[in-house]
Amino acid sequence: MKIAIGCDHAGYELKEIVKDKLTSEGYELIDLGTNSSESVDYPIYGKAVGEKVASGECDKGIAICGTGIGISISCNKVKGVRAALCNTEHLAELSREHNDANVLCLGAREIDKELALKIVDKWLSTDFLGGKHLRRIKMLEE
Ligand code: RB5
Image (cartoon, rainbow, N blue to C red; front, side, top):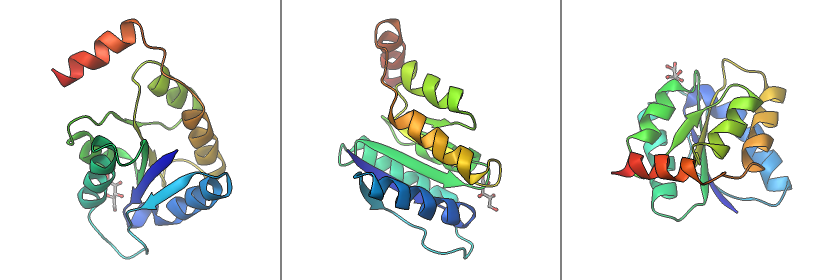
């Protein structure tokens, strides 16, 4: 699976941790930056992650900022993206099962690193349920 990953300065440290974990597990990562803790603007990185997923170049995306809010709004501006801000494992599970979320957003200043990695695991290992949920996500594109 190919995963686009991006963040702003507030998400940089967590992005590196997530990247190391997923690379060691055999995932192919496309890192869209940012690559330091120097202040940058999250819409640039949310858009970049969203476009990689919407174009089909990447199967899924992970986007990180301080709260996860700004970058999730940015990702969701890209047509075809269903970005979900998840700060629990349960939300990660439901965002896949019900919403077929194709981008996971994390708030690096809101959750600790251990929880963030559990959320990533849950999100990547949960499948979409389809059925009535497919009808609903199709409506989002109409
Ligand atoms: C950056 O200070 C912060 O505003 C950003 O990371 C994010 O939380 C925005 O939603």
